[in-house]
Amino acid sequence: MSRPFRIAVLAGDGIGKEVMPEGLRVLDVAAAKFGLNLEFKHFDWASCDYYTQTGKMMPDDWKTHLSACDAIYFGAVGMPDIVPDHVSLYGSLLKFRREFDQYINLRPVRLFEGVPCPLANRKPGDIDFFVVRENTEGEYSAVGGKMFEGTDREIVLQESIFTRTGVDRVLKFAFELATRRARKHVTIATKSNGIAISMPYWDERAAEMGKQYPQISTDKQHIDILSARFVLQPDRFDVVVASNLFGDILSDLGPACTGTIGLAPSANLNPDRKFPSLFEPVHGSAPDIYGKKIANPVAMIWSGALMLEYLGLGLPEAEQKPYLDAHNAIVKAIETVLIQGPHTPDLGGKSNTTDMGEAISKLIK
Ligand code: ATP
Ligand code: MG
Image (tube, rainbow, N blue to C red; front, side, top):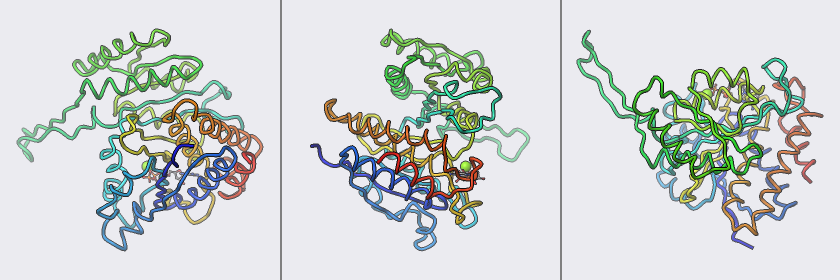
């Protein structure tokens, strides 16, 4: 048997502290059932509690601790009434993404049976795709400046940076993901009819990458109509790959089309596996419901399933199966509980966070 996977557990703030125990409960049950080799390291930092005690979000040697781990299982960060968001977020999560070169932000978008869909006449199966967002460069490169500040001649310039390495690696990830999917289709989000230099380059690199994957069909859609189709024709999509800005928007719009934010998971990946990847719910710390124990734990639990799948895929093929089976079993248990309950209030139910976590665990056992 291979060495244990070491997982850093950072619950963070607010409902992060309420959904994390349910995520861990499910991982424990899955580990026992499928014989997974997981070792958890709990840290109380990357939280606003730690900040109020120490004046910083994390200890100086945070990187040493996390570099020794294979993955980071992260709850949520932010207590805006106590610590400004730019301090909490830049002092933790955004540091991880940057320092660990987590250049893929991956979000599954899926409509489950039993969950009311905000789009009319949509049934489960109609919405089942992935958004792959470039997470390190593009439109979010902080390069630029101001001239003639404070005068009516003021000029503000901000550059977008697209490197061949950066573009190719996100495209490659998307095509690889599509090879493991039934429909084998990649949609390239672009805007080469309006952004005259970077987006035609993006299209060119996508066409080039596509040549290496003859089994994958592709289409290219401008971001404006692509967004409209998320709402009007979500059944068209399988894997959608996008630059940092476009991906940011699509990866919120996608989950919004499938009901509650309490379901949506995400992965920040360093697919080279040089650094740990991070798995977290899309939602934040939700101070408005914190303390009531009514947060939906599915996003946290599903993020844990994504983590097992990702860790498994890094193993030699002969050792992958228990991890992939555990992922599938967790997703199946989520599907069942979303149909039959118990449900937290965001799903229209009256149950609490623990009820839902326990029900999912029981189904896996
Ligand atoms: P952040 O800046 O930390 O992302 P936010 O206020 O932007 O915080 P969330 O914390 O995600 O966003 O909360 C948005 C809304 O969704 C809130 O009304 C919150 O109660 C609700 N919400 C978020 N997560 C859940 C969950 N797991 N279960 C139920 N409701 C949730
Ligand atoms: Mg938010």
